[in-house]
Amino acid sequence: MLDSSLTLAVIGSGTMGEAIVRGLLASGKLKPSQIIATDRRSEVARAVAAAHGVRTTTRNAEAFRDAEVVLLAVKPHEVVAVIDNDEARELLASKLVISIAAGVRLAQLSSWLPGSAVIRAMPNTPCLIGEGMTVIARGAGVSDAQAGVAIEIFGAVGRCLELEDKLMDAVTSVNGSGPAFAYVFLEAICDGAVRMGLRRDAAMEIAAQMFQGAARMVLETGQHPAALKDMVTTPAGCTIAGLLTMEDGRIRSVIARAVEEAAIVAAKLGQG
Image 1 (cartoon, helix red, strand yellow):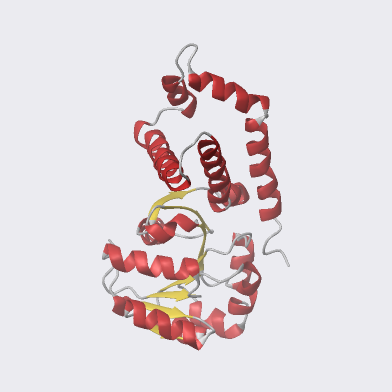
Image 2 (cartoon, rainbow, N blue to C red):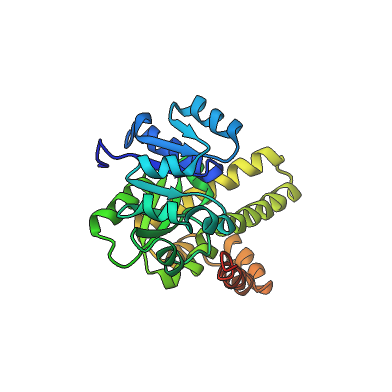
């Protein structure tokens, strides 16, 4: 459990920043008095304060000063301007700083904040409904206790896993971009269902629940997707007919290449 005396600063109150605030409060891991949220737009800061009862400000330095843990939820190209300055280095010295900016590496974070413990994280948009996945990578000198704080923060909005920094571009493609790939696949299944006579709303509900159930089968049984696929595929049945049609379209190669291409682009984010 997060320390009841801990104060968290969320720098940037956009989609992901606010989702994490909402998840932490809903889970009871932090109280509103333990969170400071910032945004450069005063109207956004006021809206977040009204919606969640947390303290807000348009001044990052104020949040840096008053928090023990800082979550950077700004765009990749904005990170350097937020923390690569003497004031930020002084205020964040000896504190834990967690960045969710895609493509910004631990080496960069450490060079800008040499006196801070830094963690890189990649959450995804399902965090908005508490079903997210986040992967973290810790910088040199980050303790197990500090990594545990990050895991608890992201655990409030879904699952959290720790991996090495060198794998984070691949993580960004699978975890960050992956929901978009899944939505395209889901939409295509719905189109096929509509073609065969189902109403669009019914097709969407059926397909979305099918996706959710299939994904949970993998997580909860621990079985390989291929084994679960074979459970559905009866001899001379409709499933194998559909699977062979997918293979005719090189579906596996196309999806794998999409992940590869997204990872290549992710590696360039936050690099100037």
